[in-house]
Length: 136
Image (cartoon, rainbow, N blue to C red; front, side, top):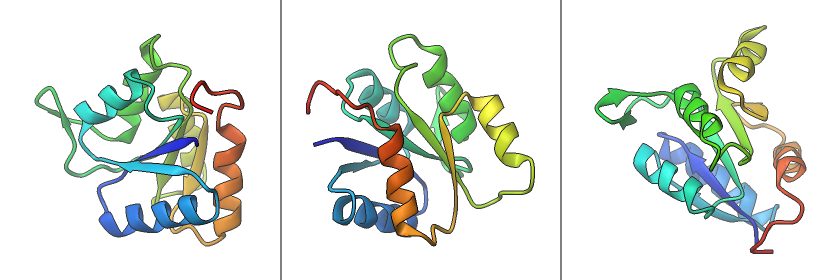
């Protein structure tokens, strides 16, 4: 079973995403907003894809406040985690934001909140999941 790591500081959103992914996608789900944990999970390959909230209000890494863009940059600049697909999730999507966020962060995809079309949400994630992952 493939696992999606949800990095999200809003528990309600995290719960909604979890439910959609497990029920509709048949995927395993982990959730954390702790950046050290995100890094650990990514490096240990315990997730096949990361759903990354852009505006993490409480996340801190090595004493600095970080958002989803910054965390994605860190993941993408580390050869150990660079190939892990990251999908940015944001509620503040203005025209052009999407391209900026993707360019800045090196993320693989982009989803805006609120998620209205659950099937499309799952499809978008399925598309980016590695096809032949080691843990099946």
